[in-house]
Amino acid sequence: MRAAAAFDMMMDGKTVLVTGSTDGVGRYVAAKLAVADARVLIHGRDGARHNPGR
Image (cartoon, rainbow, N blue to C red; front, side, top):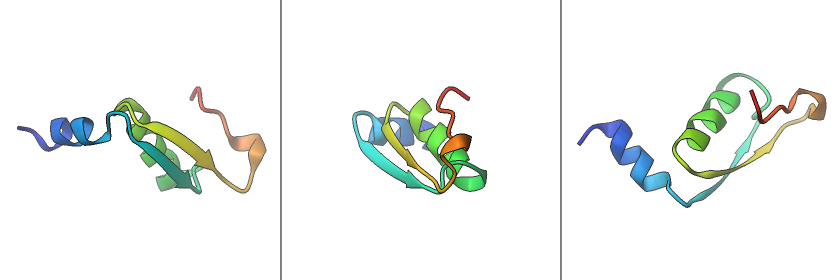
């Protein structure tokens, strides 16, 4: 099994809080978790930069 496939199975239905998710690594991690079917809660200092649709 590919590592990505195993990751997808592990995250299905999980809830994850990602801090610093408005830019950089936090934003990347939040996007990958969302693709892996995790419920992602995002948090950052700049509310204007949050755009979950990106």
